[in-house]
Length: 410
Image (cartoon, rainbow, N blue to C red; front, side, top):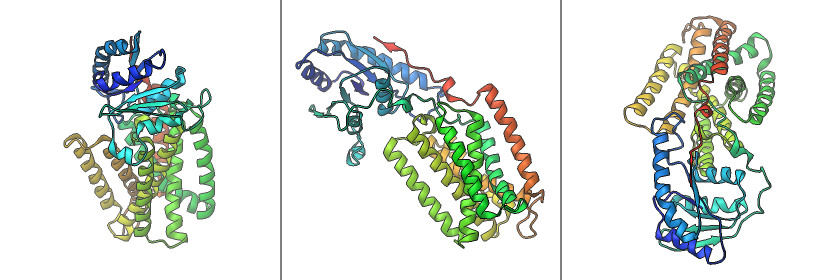
């Protein structure tokens, strides 16, 4: 039985008695973690909210046991999304059917992705308790999944915790994406087409390795970010240089594409939090979003620095100021954490691109230090390597280290 209600409501008890009337049952009560998914495992209120949920669960179990006519076990999941909690529990224990009593979300119902509808695809009969006192039953929509089919729900979070190290490496990766693309294309003479093919092939190999890992591994993760940064830059460069697509057009197109990815991701998973990347589908959405943020950032950065003739230095100040504004909105005005993260993530790309151009180029019109793409790339790759080695040894940015299961109430 899955519920996020604060007590054993009469509607829920009536549904249990109706089920017991058909034959004896063994019941386990599952309560999703009330802490929002965007809170990382070290959020100061995360454990207190779980403790509150366990106290409520302890008070709700006695009347449920009376309705069942026997002992009932219950626990609070470490997962916030009820679907995540259900799939993880089904992976560990065999159950024959589900009773769901959760607060209804009308928009989800219109989109036909409400929890009972989603759960019916797991291959089990589902009884949903409605707020007006009625309850309805649904047969499974698909045959029950074979053992271990939900393995993705058992993966640990595949991305790092958002710390100062995260933002430092991210900005340096975006800088390398700008300078390394120019280095391979111009200095080594690969040409735009060959550079795109080589980088794309390397990205596919690294993504295969990344997807096969059960947890976040700093070296692999940041290698993907570096290469996807280069590849995202090359996508924009191809559109601009080979197909003469205006930067205003490519910026708009990539912004729309990114919005579509976010929309599909949320419609499918009900969260955009990077603290819940523990399924293959969510990881696929995550990397697709990352790719479009890099392509969008490259187009926006080039549009600002060159087409609008602002220069590299002013572009750094503009995008740095925008990131500072997002940061202030988060800490001072309590901007939604997920929205703040993705806004900052998108803006770091043009910031890094502008830093890379400013350090590597020496253009009379746009400015720059003139260090060259080779020197700039080596400087930032060296810094990234040092930080990644440090994080690999210390695991300071690994979220799963602090993510401990809630204790069980029986």
